[in-house]
Image (cartoon, rainbow, N blue to C red; front, side, top):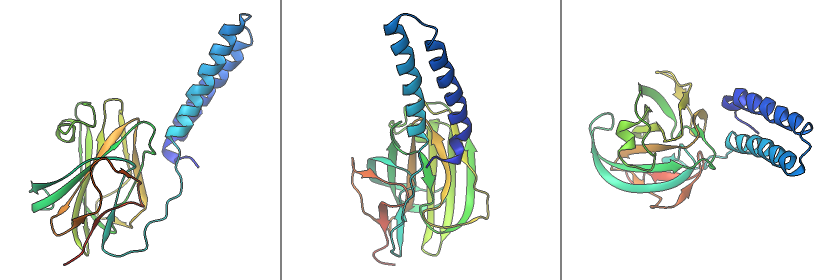
Amino acid sequence: MFTKYGYFTIGVVSIISFFLIAVSFFIHNLPGKISLIFIAVAILLLTLNFFRDPERIPPDKKNIIVSPADGKVLFVKKIQHDKFVNGEAYKISVFMSPLDVHVNRIPISGRVELLNYYEGKYVAAFEDKSSQLNERMEIGITSPQGKIFFTQVAGFVARRIVNHLKSGDEVKLGERFGMIKFGSRSDIIVSSKWTPMVKKDEHVTAGETILFELTHQ
């Protein structure tokens, strides 16, 4: 299954790949012919791999926050957050490599109350400063368990953030809401009353891996 956000790109790359294969039939040099076919097939397969969109089954559990993105946990740390969470908070950052699934999913059920888009630079997404310098979309959801703030941050290669949320939308844990194309990062910030359930360098899965659990209210 492929994400609808990639249909146009897949179509363009498919046309280019088939054109290159057609051109290869007019090349009489065998190594050259094989090289061109290999390049065409490789480009198409990499594109299909990037825009894959497997089904995900959210955990059947209450009082949890799941990862909005696939990738590796860069860090888990305490911070002071005054923008939406307002107070002492935990921050988890997830780095998405070009080989990860890049479709983003809602981390908790609730109401969208904050949407801010910022143009910016394209610092490597694994750099901590990228969350403040890079092109990004900030999202705030108010749930029965409290507020959660998370981001879509463009990386060094990424040049487009896709997000179809609107302020006031009622959203459900695990739903697709967008993607970041070609390498990126997501930061998740919640009140310190939540308990982190992952550690640095763990690989997490969007819509399935529990990042935080509310063990006491």
